[in-house]
Image (tube, rainbow, N blue to C red; front, side, top):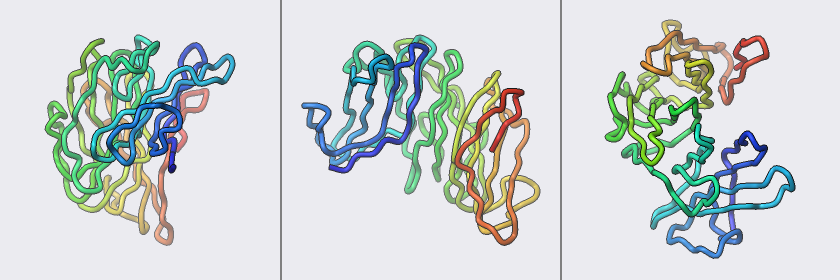
Length: 238
């Protein structure tokens, strides 16, 4: 079969969690109806053996794009019980992402869950829409409150141009959200400089207000941002 891992994270015990998609069913006796199903895999950090596994899917193809550890130690793909992946504590439907739309990353800070992605339309399950899509595919960040056994959407914010935009990475630090991506238009006042430009946005994690936006490009290049991290002194690295 064809299998792929798309996201990985660890918990405070050193255990490893992986999500992606597969169609071979070799890791589980469960056979779901879709050609491709999302999966969550837990590997024991002390002996590197598989300690839990679950497939998630319906009659259509399903893909696991992001995985994170919640404040209570449980796992967010859906929210899965950390000790028994067959037990789903909650799932949440954002709404139709439209043609070409996708979920990007999932990150957690406290009881707040942030999901990035791209869509060409508003999200019916996105809570308050702070800014609307502009055109083509736009990036978005959706803020969820993890209530333990349920989740509720607070807000969704679209970041993009009148052309196609793709998200690359999402992280959160000290109550601030950092989103990177690639644009074929202009997401700041400088506009498009190359064939495609990379960009970074800093937002407030509570309100969704934009602190700053930076677009980075050069006239003879196609640039793409795929990750963001912080140095030990707190400087972001794109």
